[in-house]
Image 1 (cartoon, helix red, strand yellow):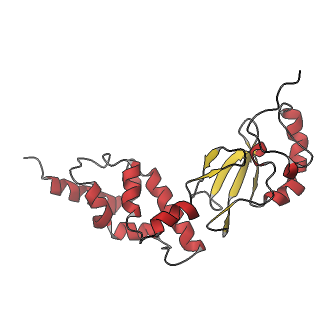
Image 2 (cartoon, rainbow, N blue to C red):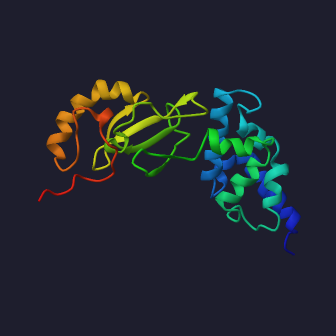
Image 3 (cartoon, helix red, strand yellow):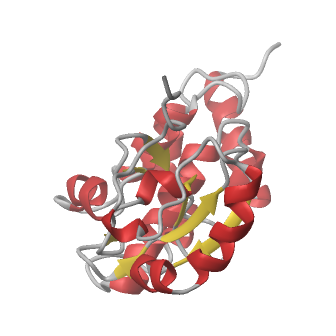
Length: 209
């Protein structure tokens, strides 16, 4: 006879308990949630936990068991379901504040939404083209100004050309060396003398004539 749904669920929970969340096929959003909470725990402190993974591991029955009800494999719950269930362990209003203090994405001054990588080495990181942050005179932050976003600045070909946590300092310094190289390689794109005063854009220069 087939095992009961309860036995199946207990087996799945045991597998996660022993192997960790990496065994879940759709764990990316869950891992991002854990990283976002831990970043706030380190930057702000209580009531934000500093080891949300440990809390989730110790309380699997409170959040993971319900989403595994009736499941035949760990493939069943999708990423959004897992992350939503895990967030339910945070005391209110932390789930609401999480979206404001550690948002999953950042909108560049050029108006494009990019993902924030919270598991990146060196802290929360976003990638965008250099031209998309022209005109920025205050470096972007999260956690109510406590954490400077690490910005990986890309060439028009989407290759990394600089990494900074201080855009104003970059405009005054490293930008000018990079500009000499980039201007020759990508003449169809703007490389202004004063990037802090230029307009952010995600497009190449319009054709003349």
